[in-house]
Length: 68
Image (tube, rainbow, N blue to C red; front, side, top):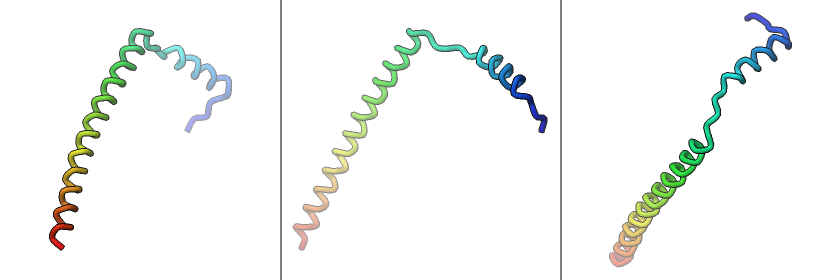
């Protein structure tokens, strides 16, 4: 493996850092809104699934307690 000097390494880092393209403020805001929408939808979905399976478990426990 070829070794690079600290000066050459710093130059390579600067070259790579110049290639970074940062998102605009609008792109950042749109991404944040989409994340909020998706997490809200997933939260509601999992709340519904949890409620549904909780009701099934309660029904099964009540059914099993009545059989004793």
